[in-house]
Length: 217
Length: 217
Image (cartoon, rainbow over all chains, first blue to last red; front, side):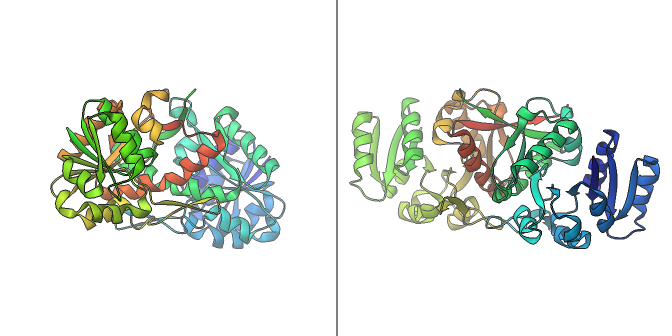
């Protein structure tokens, strides 16, 4: 599969790196064509990966991964170009987080979400929200956390969710631990989990954890 | 211990009933003195429990439990009276939830929480937020859900949190599964988990579940 991964931060590099290790062709996209982090990454990847602009990465990908911060995601996707997203699975892993005096703040929140905003702004894309409930290390290596902990997906397109569930399987998330929570509006619920996750990470002193939903019966 | 439980809904009746079974003296408080649900409950409890107004319940309790809906909690606590809460542990289990056309909506959210509002409105009370992340059945019978799933507490007063942790122990939550997440502002994080819980309950078709935080290492 050809992936275009937008964003050269920890999340983008982790996902692009793991997808490349799994044998996929990956283009890591950034705001400018000469991003040194992206170029270094592509050089180290030696042939199976490329670096480019958001537009080049989105154009190259059969599946596009939005791995930039939620606060700049719409700008990055506009730079990627609606034509390069049309009809494609768009995996949205962002959270609209900013820290204000150490307090995590979300915007949008509750009455809207980044998942929904992206779907509305790019109606031709098949947006699937996932992976936004764990740290970048756990995203690409869920086995580092013991137990049958869960990953959530939501989105409007059932086939797109199946494809993303298959991608999650390659990343180490067994299908039985991937919970389809419904349409893209459910992104509100998974994005609103973030303050609890941030607080837990402060209490534990690290982000190497995830939640397992335990059911009666 | 003498408990005053405010609220005659499922949450209030479940907590009042279980605390009474555990041997405590419980007064179940409602808006009016002649609430038929509360009177029937007290009659069935045969002597170890009483029904009364919010003010009577708060006055009677050494510990007061706010078990009314978050949308009316401040009104109920004003009716209970600041003088009857002063210096007491006030266990806040509410969520500021309302359903609008089937969609769960929270108010306040993100920049404030009911836990904080209650603490601000009643500075003499020692507010501890807990139990708001599970259904009323799981609150009083955590063993119905398998696994080492977790309960959260937060609040400004360390001694109050210790007392509430002891109460949780009586309800069936072992101390090792009770995570102290910090001050009362953390109520934002646990209240914002609610939309995810509501969504999970729709997917599963019931509320008999809880989350276990799984840690690496």
